Image (cartoon, rainbow, N blue to C red):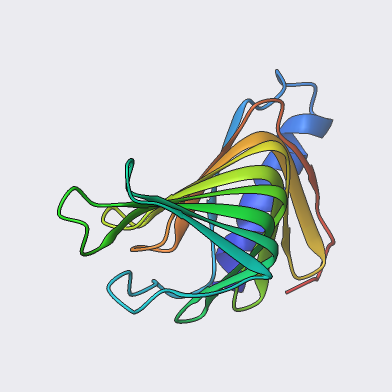
Length: 164
């Protein structure tokens, strides 16, 4: 997995140094392993507000969300329940969002996690770190089911030769 990440980062670096057009999209590996999106979602926060009328709940203040190896932290997380009210459909995180899965971590202004599809979309000044390497852009879409992602929007990378 480390060699795949290194190869992707090296390809982006070579393209940038060779005078090729700036990369607008980069495919990446995230978390090393696929995430089981059927695992329970655990949430901790300083406060909770529930709105039965629209089927949402807002966790605020030092919010920590965990599901298996995936961890998310943010200032606020709005939980949107499925129409049957028995399951979580989406999590909308905002305010200094950080998502970590094994040795990879991503930071952004906002993130939307759609539980059924296992997709997390991070937006706003996204920074992905994988060991000593870093990749930034405006939007990162992570597929937790297969451990892959796509970075979009003026993608920039820092590649550390020989790094794992």
